[in-house]
Amino acid sequence: MPAFDELPHDEQLRCLAELATSALAQYGIAAPDPVLINLSENATYKVDDAGSGRRWAMRVHRDGYHSRAAIASELAWLQALRNDGVVVTPVPVAGTDGELIQSVAHPAMRRPRHVVLFEWESGEEPSEKDHLTDKFRVLGEVTARMHRHSLGWTRPDGFERLTWDFDTSLGTAPHWGSWRDGMGLDTDKTALFAETVGLIGRRLERFGKAPGRFGLIHCDMRLANLLVDGDAVKVLDFDDSGFSWHLYDAATAVSFFEHEPQVPELMAAWVEGYRRVLDLPAEDEAEIPTFVMLRRMLLVAWIGSHSETDLAQSMGVSYTATTVPLCEDYLRTFG
Figure (cartoon, rainbow, N blue to C red):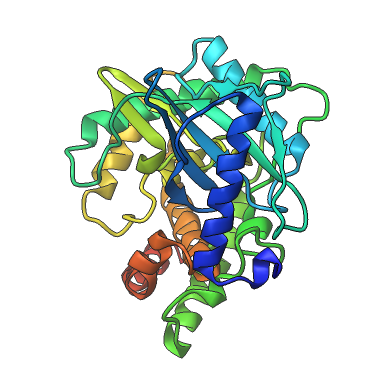
């Protein structure tokens, strides 16, 4: 069988589905084949057991993105957040061997993949088309509670997560590839984006990484990773959680719609909610547009390096095009 990386995309999906199905045995679950619900860094499946009425979410990890220790660290934090009453997070399910992280092999893959199973969480994903102002106040408050927890939490020995700073986002060692590989770039856009990235870097260097500004955060608090269940906001998908600026979490909340006219109102609501829990100095609040631009340019890079995903294909060139006026406005305001 050809190596996984050499297979066409459809064949890769078939191999991932086969692996997900075989993983069920390691949890003692006899259910129909898992159904793919999301393909991003990882492949996420819905598992339904019609007999018991139970449902789970299974995550098949991308090869080489996170080590086993890093995944264990992610699970340690999200469990602590839930157990300490900070926020509702997914509940990981142990396999029949008692381990939360399973290792599952497939003939086409060089190495076994890490697999994690979670209890299914009820609720509905918010949409940018909803009236989100009140939800963003709640989101700001929830985010501040998470930041407060991470500031006081004693991390277990061997804790390991990625760092998302300028260098690993837009600089010389980017986790998601170079923004220069974004879809639809031409000479003029590349020059504009380069000027914008340079300004972001200079402002972040001045902003610094003091403990009150930089630490362990979720790093992907976008609407797709939230569930609203009555009055509760549940936070999902800690796969990108790591060390970054606290205000990066604010920017991720408007991921993929940073150019929409309601964003300033939503950011103001987020700040209002955040300040219910933690102090946010005015000078820090004034830097939020820099973090929005950091996230926007990082997503330009992500789309370019994940062109096989449905999300990248649906956004693609138009996302790059709508980034142009954001860059122009940012340079006028902060340059």
